[in-house]
Each structure stands twice: as C-alpha cells, then as structure tokens.
Length: 239
Image (cartoon, rainbow, N blue to C red; front, side, top):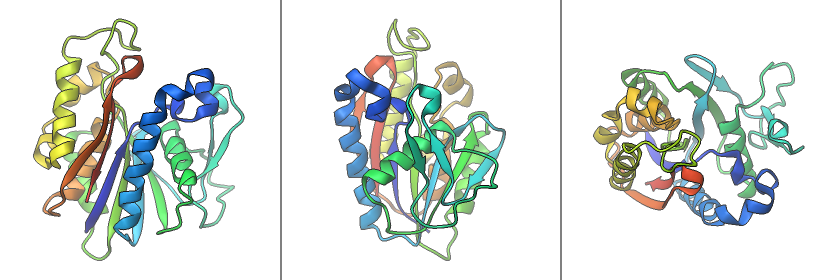
C-alpha cells in the first residue's frame, strides 16, 4: 500500500553546479523538496519508487545503483541512484535527467531509509495506463513510498521554453489544487493532450501517483508553487 508520496520538479537547474550564478533563485524549491523527502522518511516505507518522465517509450525500470550525470548540461557532476544495490555497470542505460535530479536530491538527504528503484515513464503514456501502473506499484504486501518527479506547464510567460499560452496558468492551478487536496480523481482527469501542448512533463508521473494512492486515505500539503523562468514548479507531500 502507498504510505507517502513526495512531488518535486525535475529541472537540472535544481543542481547548483548546473544553475551556476542563478542557483540562489531556486533555493526555495530545493528546500521544499528536501522537506517533502523528509515526509517520505518519516513514513518508514519498505520500498521507495522514484517515478519521472523519460524519452523512452512505455515505462523503463532503473535498479538501485544506476548512475547518471549532468555532463549533458555542461557540468561534470555524477550521481548514483541510492547507496545500496550493485553498481549495474552492464545495465546499458544512464538515468534520464529527471531521475538524475531525484538521485541528486536523495544524496542531499543521505537516503538510507528503504531500498529504492527508479521508473522512467514516457510522457505519452495514456492516463488509464498510468493509473493502472500506479496501482501495480502500490501492491498490498508492503509499505511503498513514491518520489514523483515532473514539471507543470512550460508556457507561463513570453520567455518560457514554450512561449506564453493563456491556458497554462489555469492548468497549473488545477494541478496545484489537486496536489494540495490529495485529489486522485482530479489528477487522473488531467487532459494528456493539453499537458503535451503545454509541455507539462509531470502529467504521467502524477497520474501514476494518483493510481497508487487510490483508497490509501492520504492527505496532501502543497509546499511550493512558483513559475521561475515561466515553468511551473510544484512541490507537495502526501502522507
């Protein structure tokens, strides 16, 4: 069963070395993410699953020990998913950026509270498949926590990566409301086509969380809601 979930944005800019001189601008988001991870630790899960957007189709697992880096963003910073498990040198894949950001956050907390694994999900994964996948992750035999990575719209301002779209603020407000209320039905109802048009890469991970949380009786708290650089960044905790 799902005992807790944390929602964090996934821009590599959360890593100070990537953000460089702009790093202080996201100090509030970083602090909120660490607070959300504290909620996961307090829930004492048997297993932590990190879910984030990835370019590969469907959903792809990443075992504990998988490595990633931010070299593609101009800095020689490496990360490892968790401290346990074997180092899967022959796995053949590095962590996608969203999961690399999650690994960086977990390193900041010295996470050792439960075994963990990563799951990269295609942004095109259908809502009903997301909900079903979430239900599978939160099976009845163990206490599962989720770390859910994903951004809201990237169309909040003229200088945003997706330029200004008048629908973006309303979309982000509905996501924020649903996260604050632990409203699984509201998250499941998010329009996948609209999310894609608004470049909201968190849609599929949020809907996986909604499927996992169905019937779990969790309450929600919104810890951060802002749109630096015209991109919606949301941090929430469910417990």
